[in-house]
Length: 127
View 1 (cartoon, rainbow, N blue to C red):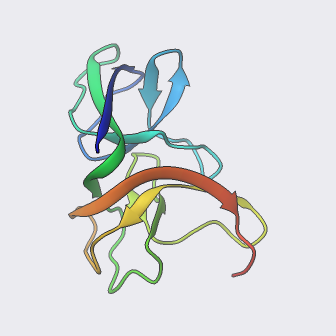
View 2 (cartoon, rainbow, N blue to C red; view 1 turned 45 degrees about the vertical axis):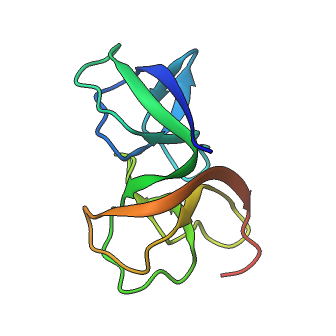
């Protein structure tokens, strides 16, 4: 079952990008690897304050930010300050946050891939 919520945009937002709660009822792109995303945009916001629909759980789509030959792990992490994702986590021993799990085996930067949106976080134990 997919879960959606409408928020205000804290910045201009593209579709299929990770966002986090930057203020009350407001979302923006995550600002670093320790910032917990809450979901993925399913609509775009052309201006600050515009309404944007965010999928917070379920099967969806997300844009990848770096070319990958094959995902070595299904988790999707923050790749860039613009909400794109990658399969590379933070260094061992640091907090890393993810937006969900890839359902695609490969892709190039800018591709929209299928994923299971299920935000989470943890301490990476090894490299």
